[in-house]
Length: 49
Picture 1 (cartoon, one colour):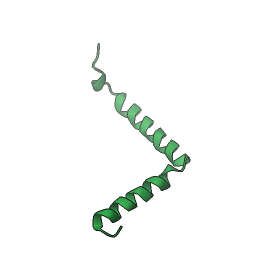
Picture 2 (spheres, one colour):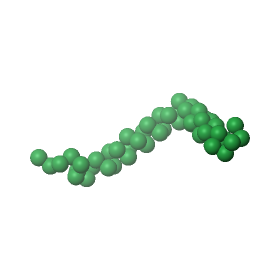
Picture 3 (cartoon, rainbow, N blue to C red):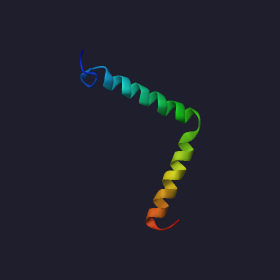
Picture 4 (cartoon, rainbow, N blue to C red):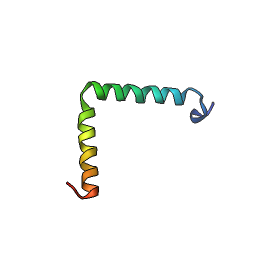
């Protein structure tokens, strides 16, 4: 049996699943939440927040 990690299709399949998850998250409006949290973390790191 061929090793699963050596299969040529595993990379493109994982990329497609990742892209589908990103699109699903954007459609649910999670992008704004993620950006807000990222900005807050950056502000804490530089000492403004």
